[in-house]
Length: 160
Image 1 (cartoon, helix red, strand yellow):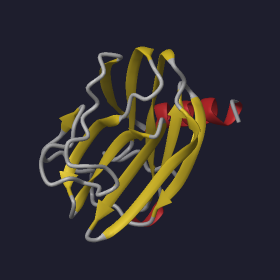
Image 2 (image 1 turned 45 degrees about the vertical axis):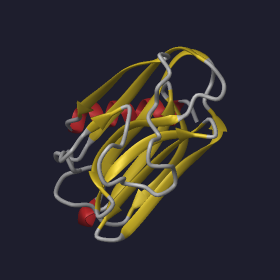
Image 3 (image 1 turned 120 degrees about the vertical axis):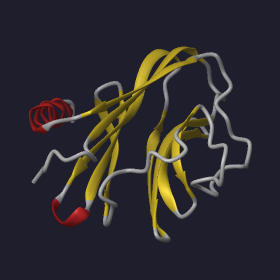
């Protein structure tokens, strides 16, 4: 069941002329005690969520393509303050996992694009892990209502 509350969101990073070996944080919010981060490490897209010491990690087995494309995640609410995160290359699902417990909303404290500058959300990368390559052009965060969530879910299921 998708509830369509304030946690439901689609985050899209746009790349132009991306090359192999480009890694770094795309977006982070919060800190090591609570928050989320989307990053590229070893060419793979990863999402981490932390709440009160509970850490959930979702990493794609597929390496991000080179060239011009979009990648990101969709986060959908589930019953009982849980959620599902789905990693996307374009509109194609490349990984997914359940987040057992989330707060009433994802953190918006200290949101950073292209870096994780405060108390890092994740210890999986070094302190200065900014995505410095110019190929990372923009980041869009769309908050989704029930109707849009169903459209996104249908599109992802049709590409599996």
